[in-house]
Length: 331
Image (tube, rainbow, N blue to C red; front, side, top):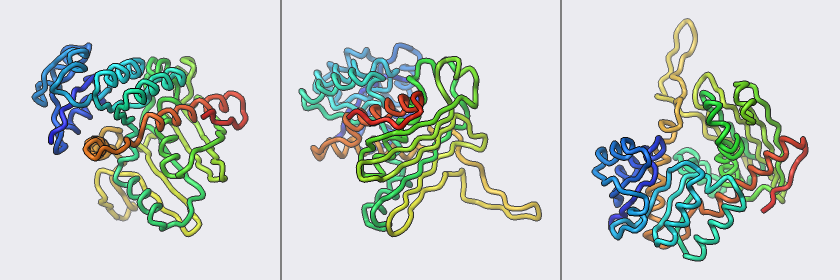
């Protein structure tokens, strides 16, 4: 069986997912839609897909599933439209920046019994998947503490920061989902400290670019997250999980594992410096998992509820960063 996809959104992340579909057995990109005609045409010609309107893709009998990679403010409406049209749905995070809008959207998804996966791609990184597998195998005993480092090579333009929903909803939301994934429990309280240290224009836009967050679960497990919009040495992505029997961690990914030793010292290749190169395999694994889950008739993971919970943690983090106190997560 080949699952036939329609792609809604032909921007940067749309190109990533188009490539992932093309590289995945049992998947075919049939059509693409985008308000920018040239962007849609480029993906269409690259992967043998037709350029169609959003409505045409939603109503098409030759399309089984849609990939929603449009701007965030279009996600919820498109999810609802696809759900009503009987399509399986993959949507990039977040469903929406409004908790109320997300809840309403998920009500529609649940009423139609639609399959919905949210694009938290880091769960599908081979290294992070192996960390979770070691935890499940009991290698470190009971999980006690999680440390997540997530720092971008360069800050986004201040114009992006102004419409992104802020660092917690836009960037740290990936880390909130990863914390839940590794802890195996939902955080119930959040303490966040945040500053604008990288680009004053981001601060003028009402956002921050540097943050430290502590999450605590009901049983007392702790996750600590370190974020920055600037890492001069590359895309810094590390995790560490400490348990009752030991520790398991995943280090940064480099272009090669080669190390040169001379009289001047030791030299290694730099870190990968872009999320699309760092997480190429994660995006492919994500699409493959979406297809396998559909074929098996199982519940999607990460689900719409996972997306909602990550957003609720982000809301608590934002509130904490302003109040200076730990804040409860309003599940």
